[in-house]
Image 1 (cartoon, rainbow over the protein chains, first blue to last red):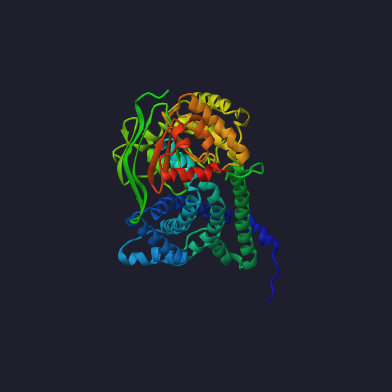
Image 2: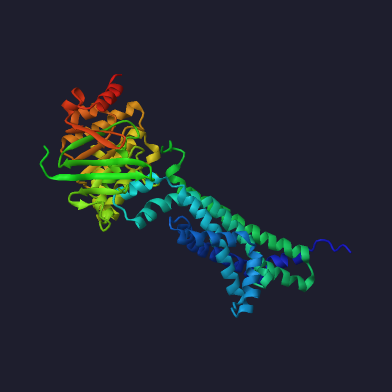
Length: 230
Length: 249
């Protein structure tokens, strides 16, 4: 039986508050995953770049595990598997934990690449005027690394916005989960998933615009007037 | 001009890169207040490494280096505090590309010396005036020529009111027509009595202002002479051969 497209149902779901809330949860999960991933990833990147094996080896191991396994498997292990060992997390806790741990591994690699791309001479120059190691990081390495990190970081934000949908598998009530729940009402499968797709598109497009502004801000010292440094 | 207090003292400094390659062999050198010492020698002779050991940018394996009495080689020495007293100018300028010229001159004054932003800006403006770059204060390093960038780099080092200045091949990365604008600033600095250690191939500069010339080859200080004797009457065959190669043209 061909049902055809139901405009009325489509607009009803497009303005549905329950779905809108789900989209806000998706947004919240993304903000949390990226910000906690950045903090955790920064320290993992520093460990990874350390000359000391006892720091770099655990960091490499961490990155290997979390980049080498699907987030889906990680979430199921955290939510469904760990209780077997007596470690229990709620759905929300499991989702936040899984997203943060996984994203930290990806962001650690992005941050490491950004820091490594700052020329060694910059560090020498900063030390030579008497900066301490943390001042060198804060005033000289970090701002220059940021410029390199922003494009891949923006990619990560875009990707995480969509990846959060995986948490629906452990019944986290984000956009996709709520879309699936609403299907039970009228079985408007196509209309509902198109609405969900539109929400995802609005969020990723908004992020694109924000990212471009950030890139301009960090790139202003390297604008079209620039003739290159070395 | 030079009084007798040593600003930089190096005693029997040795340094290896790996087990088999010794970059510095038993180097000893004293630079007195107000003295200008030029270090020359073929590439790979260890002159850049030697100058980077003075402010601890390169660690030494043994020997002793003191700067205004503070032991650089002592593990307990706070190197950042010591480095703030010694200005350094690099071959590739190394201005901070994400900061304006003024910000480049202020960051060390504010964050290391704790000067107020107003005080730092005033000092920056005076130094830019001095190196003839006031018009470029608000620009970014990428918008300046190499010679201009290097003059800013000298001003940035001077902004810290250093006791001595180290120059590591300051004109080697410059186009020929920009070399003199940088050398002029350095000559003026030397004539004002700044204590300077300069690694350079610019023998014209050495003849003009160097109190002493240090010739290095294969990690050793082969010869130290005043500018007259070194150029006209070098003591060693190695120095003679080096000079004949660079002064012929």
